[in-house]
Image 1 (cartoon, helix red, strand yellow):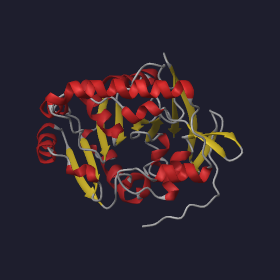
Image 2 (cartoon, helix red, strand yellow):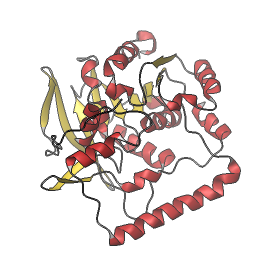
Image 3 (cartoon, one colour):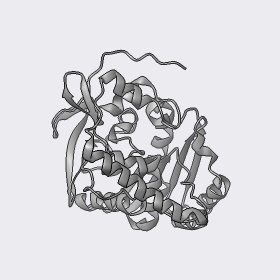
Image 4 (cartoon, one colour):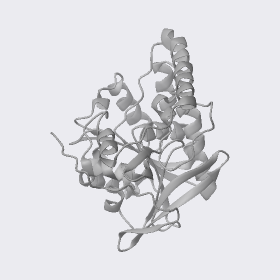
Length: 324
């Protein structure tokens, strides 16, 4: 389907601690969580005294990815905290010379957020990369995860072991290339229309104009009249995924034992994971409760079609089977 992008539209880069209203009874607050390299930016929805639901976005996205879904989820019982992972959205970037490692850095970030709020247990909700981090976090810290909700990712496909040394070389070369460019070039500047077009293209499946505009509210910084730069760290284009075999990766995921809801889009290429059936059987065997749905939509189904995803998430949230 062709989409027409108008010249109108503004990036929302308002100050932190700005209070917005998503619904008459639901406040949305921008917060910063201090960490050793700076801060983790987040959107806080609802009463902080309620059951925490920690929501984590996908690769090169940000906390706004849940802006369409959360207003459709139950209020009065849950506090939703949507974070920007390091290098994404409004969060601090890592220091120069470092890469972003999924298996360690992002799991540590999630743990730091949990520790900051002194949460005893969280419900974790992740989309794409955020879902992968959720698998790892639930496996490493099972005592902290009450339930796990994963949207459109089964697992990460790993290269055969004989390619691992090539992968290490690849990461070095990408970092070196990035650093060389950073010394001589300023970040590209775009009109809003150009930035919107870039946000829509190059994704696993189609992103609506409305959804793209939503993501841009946390991914653009205005530098002059109708000129913007992207906030995300360009090093997030080459995240360091675990350099392990598929067998080792499956062993990691076998540690997930909490109730798990997995939602995949029927138009998403990510449902074709090579070990999909083996993974589904493992979750069915190991998890206290396992719910799996393939529904209408592409990779960003929670953002493009939240009305389809919301009932599944709501039913899982309210399920008494795994309550404390």
